[in-house]
Image (tube, rainbow, N blue to C red; front, side, top):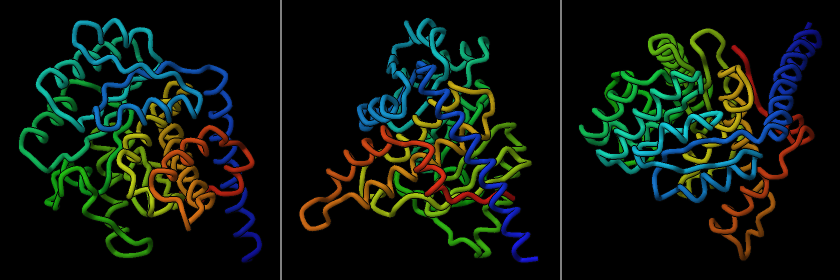
Length: 291
């Protein structure tokens, strides 16, 4: 019985991996144009990780051109890391145009919960733009959902351990969140939760050193944007992006010379790992559970 159960688990994992691999291959064939209105702290890394996975980035953000630019794109990434009144207006304008053209939109609510302006801006985007995916850390997602939480700037300030009561609550909250907002939610951290409100995946790829590099969350959102631009299954696109970023992180750490190299080299190796991501690495490393 144990053997049969494990065999079923292996078959499910192989099926999910095959979906991710198929989407990755199609992404690299299609080279989707990913329009990103993102923050200027991480914009270069977001562009480079997009190129590494096989997409094509464009970072237009002026309201006078975003509608025209997004019309050429396969997906749209909105990142509120650095907020201005102009950037929010541009995000909403681009988002509405993307909705008109059935171009998927992903929101990264960076630091939501830290200030009232950030909260109001996030709510405004969500009320006016249909979102295919929302990716954030636990604190950010809880803030949007309406649960009291502690947010420390743009840093993740909450986490959970797999199997804990907090983990169980987080999964239930994620399902309810996705159902409430009619979207796919991806909560990233030491353990990731990705759900559309029905199917729920958890993953545990990655390495803690990723938290020592600014913008790994933003880069993950950009990678999800690439997958969204390559297929029509938002849940698998979000899962693929989270798993790909996690594998790149743990691969980069393994290849680091711990005696002389640190976070700067780790960042470069992470982009290299994304560039070289392949079916062998995904089948070997992915740590996905379906619930």
